[in-house]
Image (cartoon, rainbow over all chains, first blue to last red; front, side, top):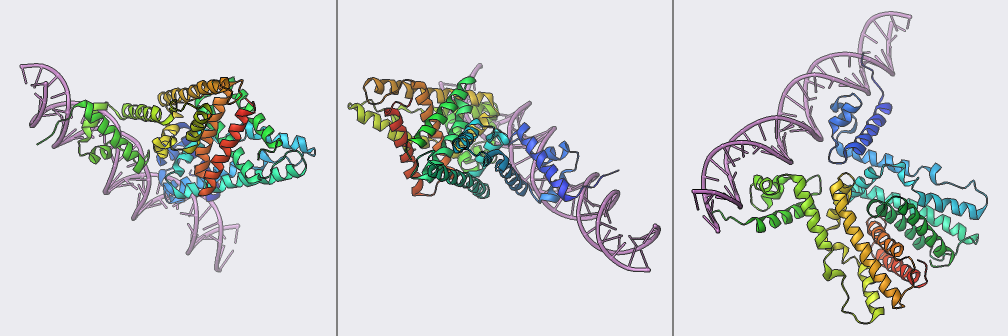
Length: 200
Length: 200
DNA sequence: TCATTTTAATTGAATATGCAGTTAATAATC
DNA sequence: GATTATTAACTGCATATTCAATTAAAATGA
């Protein structure tokens, strides 16, 4: 007997399947029929829910960005000691536990698509602005508490994001095993000392 | 009357057409028949020369990497004064005149493909290693001349590449006009002072 | 509670298009 | 005359999407 799920259940199923197929097959190898067959439904059902592939793509981007912005990952407000609080944030930024809440290949693929798709670009712009602003706010706080010394918090926050994304790159193309972890840690140290020494 | 070109002329024509179609249509919109019709040849001729699309892709990657490594862009050995020489290199690294010898979209697209294609990945690894090693050699030279102060030249070179790639990212997602140029310049300054202050 | 109506989920079959690649024939070139 | 360049015709397959039909679930009314 056929089980009819409600849209509220079926749509997330489809997006999850889309995500998994993207991980396995990449942008070019992902089709509606593969997404459908993976969860045992008819391809038409996907069109029924999302109208077309483009809409589905955008909804997946939204979902992944939400995942990326999960507060659980980045919120350390429970740490009372300011120095510890600051270090915890820096550690998570450079640990890549956080970056890898979303599969790097899929993440990267959508970055690429944003070059050709205004709507995807707009979403990523918002996401990066969110991250930058979050960091900015924290930097101002830690500056007031005397943990660091920054005058241009926006610039400092931009720099952190830049370095993080650069490291993601680095890990793809220059990394060989342990070398990368060491390097990421060095980059973090250099950044922290720049923040403390009033370079920004 | 039909003009027969030699392989030595036709193959570069095809690769150039491939590149142009990639710029206009992106990875997903690029097909052999589009590449062919753009230069008025039959699609089968492309198969004749490259055997399949995969080979053509690899040959284009090789070509673009060669372009990227063009010595004209990065060689400033004619500048006699060491300080000027050093500054010239730093300026070109952060000016993006050099990075944009290849269309950013195409460059980025192949970066993405490298995540799913070992052969493309291998090529980019070599390219980045080349850049890193080039910078490393220069840093050692400038260290000896007393222009900068580095003990771990490899780490410093890695850091420069990381920052450059991060900036490329930044320009996509966080930049708004003039802000980016200012920011890139700041990043350069912070880097240079780190090199001079013996942070590496 | 039971039957009926309405709505939503799901499928099947079909369409048109585009794709990479094959094979065989023709034209130019050396 | 042999090699190479080039095309023509074609294959088989995958693609996104449409449309109409079918089935299940929910809402309604008695």
